Amino acid sequence: MEEIQVTATFPKITQDNLAEFKRIAGDALKITAEDPGVRQYDWFFNADESACVVREIYASSEALLAHLGMVGEILGPVVELGGGIELEIFGSPS
Image 1 (cartoon, helix red, strand yellow):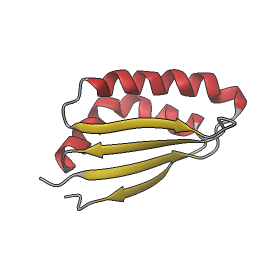
Image 2 (cartoon, rainbow, N blue to C red):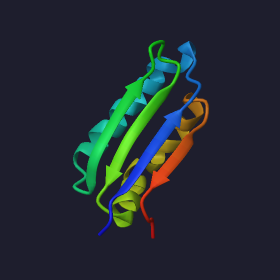
Image 3 (cartoon, rainbow, N blue to C red):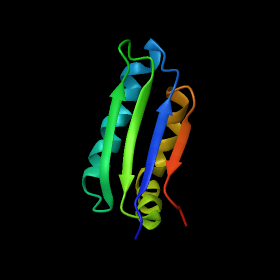
Image 4 (cartoon, rainbow, N blue to C red):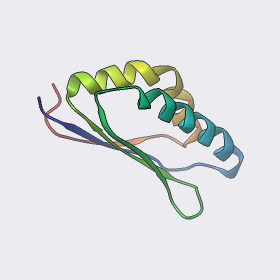
């Protein structure tokens, strides 16, 4: 198995959307806490909380796909509230 690392950036969180963005981020953290294939799942805000970077490490491509299945319902809303999403994926996803 090969680890997959993901950096997901939500680049434009408005002050109007910040509280709801944080609520959904909290939901994602709760869901992910029970996922054995997740090795890292940390959310970082910039100083004025207008952007957020999520650092993720998965045990394998299968673990990443399982994670997406678990958070799929909230992914669309968090992307919308975050002003889009920019992804960097490292490793050899299959």
